Structure formats: C-alpha cells, structure tokens
Length: 238
Image 1 (cartoon, one colour):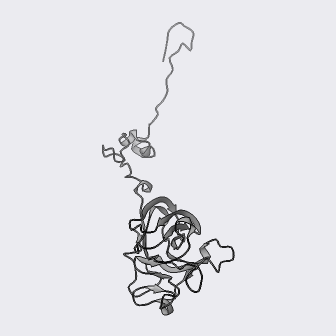
Image 2 (cartoon, rainbow, N blue to C red; image 1 turned 135 degrees about the vertical axis):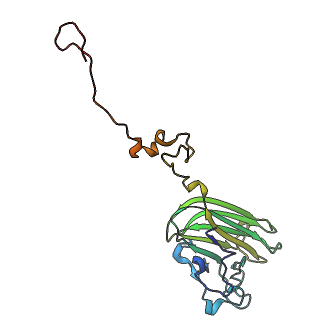
Image 3 (cartoon, rainbow, N blue to C red; image 1 turned 180 degrees about the horizontal axis):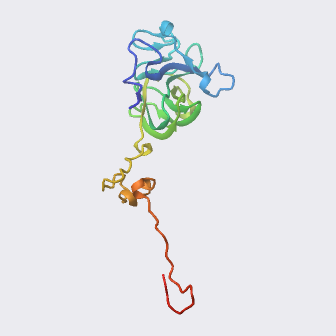
C-alpha cells in the first residue's frame, strides 16, 4: 500500500510520518455541529504523547485517545461533558486512482456502540454504526481518484445505535489503508513492429490504431490512373 495507518505508526509520537496526522474533533465546541476539514485538532506531541499513544489527558478525563490501532472517543457523559471524535488523517501526495480501505470494530465488547466515518476533504464518503459487542466490525473499500493535497480522515464517534452518545466501554480499533487501484492503471503499450499483440486488444502492429503514427505503418499512395476514351475513337486507353 501507499499508506497504512498501522505500518506507518510512529513509535515516538511524531506527526507527519508518511503524511499521517493524529488528532480529534470537538463536536460540542463546534458552533454548526458539522465536521469540516479545518475542524481537525492535531494532538501536540509534546503535550499529548503518553509513550505509546496520543491521549488528550493523562487520565480518563477525557477519554479521547489514539494508539497504533486502538482508539477511544469521548461522550457527553464524561468530563468535560464534550463529544470528541478521534481522527486518523492522511494527506495525499498522489494524483491517481486508489483504493481507500477502512476498518472499525469494538475491542471492549461491553460498550453501547460507536460510529466509524470516512471523509475526503471534509465531505463524508462512508460511515457505519458499530453495535455494542461487535468485535468484527466493518471493512470497506472505496475506489476513487485522489489528488495531491487531498485530506482523508477516518473518524470514530461515541454514537452507537439509537443515537446513544455515551462513551461507556467504547474502546475500539480502526485503521486506514491507501493502495493502488489496478483498474485505474493503464495496461502495457503496443510495441509496433514486433509481431506481438502487446496491449491485448487483438490487433498486432500496424493493424493496431496505437501504431497509426509509426512511419512503417503509413500507407503510401502512388499515382492514380483512370481508364477512358479521351479522343473519342472508340478505343479504351489508360
């Protein structure tokens, strides 16, 4: 893959490794209550790195944290009575078609459920509510074209089934992977003059339109002769 949130995880809490960034979204403090790209709050490595994870506070107040794969949101039932979504962010350095694969599951099976959400440049691409006790969760792939500078966010909120926003036992795991989409990658080009169907379209060399510009494939036209009787003597001449 081009990027993998598990493989690329920094064991020293460095932000930006292979274009990965880690942070959260404070829904409660957001005036319009709608996640946008600029609502992402990046964890400060000096303040929020706890040796093996980013955690907003050293204790359980709030719960907001991100590990290599583990993660926990914060619900309005926990101090400071704010809803926080944990977010893994990848910034594209590519301009091509890719497969975006995301996964979310619960790890504490005693919870009331969570929600996984995938965003591109602040626009929701996909989402799923994970029921309490669902240790399998979802794994989905979306094929799409991305451009350099595009921002892909994988968010986890405390919202479970029935819009339950409490975070009790919401320990979860998620990951995000960006890989090559072979359907977007062009096949081999036709090599003109080797007697082979290189691009697999059933046409060889000059019979393939890909070779139309090759000098060897140009049709040379000679003089054109017309039969007729130009002197009206009844005999056909060239």
